[in-house]
Length: 596
Ligand SMILES: NC(=O)c1ccc[n+]([C@@H]2O[C@H](COP(=O)([O-])OP(=O)(O)OC[C@H]3O[C@@H](n4cnc5c(N)ncnc54)[C@H](O)[C@@H]3O)[C@@H](O)[C@H]2O)c1
Image (cartoon, rainbow, N blue to C red; front, side, top):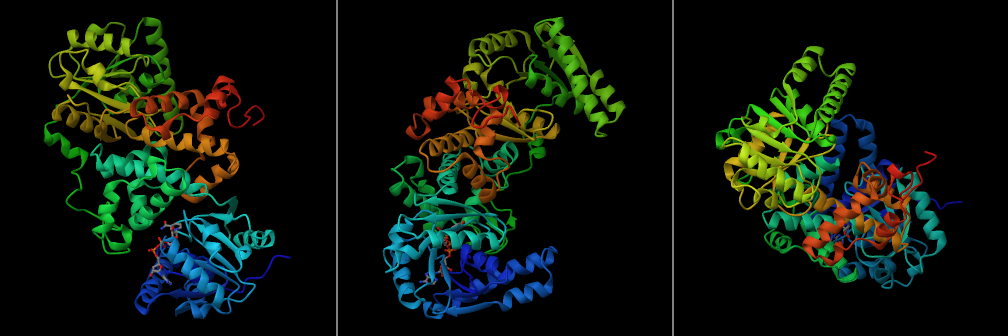
């Protein structure tokens, strides 16, 4: 029989604590909610009221249920109020000495059989537990932000936590409608260990002016389907909390440089820019605590306005190549009303590409997304050719040939001879330096990267890669073109992995290293990222879809360019590739797909 929890205590009603109170009270559990002062208690009450009122306004909670929920919460100042609770969850700031002091006090105040839990994200639950006389009743219950929404709870057992306490807490999580993964006490547990290196890297990109905050966030949302971009997520977490988590992970987690907090974070925390809770972090919010972003001095002008910003007029587009990307890109431009010249290496290839474009457009017609007349008009705009000379009068060339530098360089040298002055020459390379391609021409200022995602007609993102020689006019033209074909163009520098792959693949590689270290299972790691962070797929699901060989190649490139020790490919990934386990395409990767 699992233990009954009739009254629980929550200590600290900040970003997490207020949400945790809501989770319990919504599920019929009485809560004693404790803060350090009357003012802090009032702030906590306002946060809880705001959140439940929003749920009522959205129709997700009945008014009567909201009132019942609020009536279950007893707001108090001081830990003394916790003498009769069955379980306490502590959610005060991420400082070991503070948490140890609170646990020593809870040990004195609480009933002898009460379970004492911490919501710490990165500190050692073991170190917190030894501040009490009952370390076997101390456990980590790590909720995710926002606690009422995110399904995951990481249950952290130390080497002394009793099995009964673990089982009771697991049953409680189930009662709260949460999915728990139970793990041992390691810095960052599963989700934060995989998340924070990525978040810190994104802050580093922003700090280095590699891309704007909007572009970094849009890239990860649109390129990977994440619910929020990394900088918006930092603001939600709270920059002070994020700083402490990174700092602890750096010290506890093997001094991985990727966890050394980006210097900008410290400056922002010192300046009081803590994210949503203070009304300003990477973005500016309507008021402290509000989720609504308002324009500030860094808000960019819309991409459409880039036309006025010196973008050149583009009416006719050349697309070189006959693979998946070229085919998709031809369709994108033709559908958007551009005249398109497709150049392949022969009539046979052209016929194949033509067929593929037609098939894809037909699918749109069958699904009712494209009128037959529009399909015919789009096909009518495309000219099929096997000679580069036909690109003499286009305004833009998009190259999507094989990913080999020598081939791309030779092609760009030819385009330089053939194309009229003022044409924008774009490469879709996903891994080669755009500057190498640009320098094969006499006009590097006109060369830019246009990194489409696969499948191009569907994926809403294009990375616009600006080299150190790309002119402002060329990148403005590239941005305007993205907008004209209905895509979001994000501008970034010419570095390995651009934005998306540079942020995504090290995270995937870290997940492989975590599995390799036997910290958790592929299933639990996938759950943790999906249910704790709202990712559409877990890292192992995604690796199997992308292909382990492709992932390894990208990770190697990143490691080679940046020489970051933490980017070294996981040996397990290398071994799986060597063994021919490449993911779905070979029937087996991290999982066996033959019977699925
Ligand atoms: N922010 C997140 O996204 C997130 C997610 C999961 C876990 N956590 C963890 O949750 C914990 C709390 O983080 P947060 O972001 O909610 O912090 P926060 O700064 O938003 O809130 C902390 C609250 O604790 C209160 N407090 C401080 N000392 C106290 C005391 N002695 N007694 C009672 N209350 C006290 C403060 O007044 C404040 O309201 C941390 O351990 C953090 O690592 C945070």
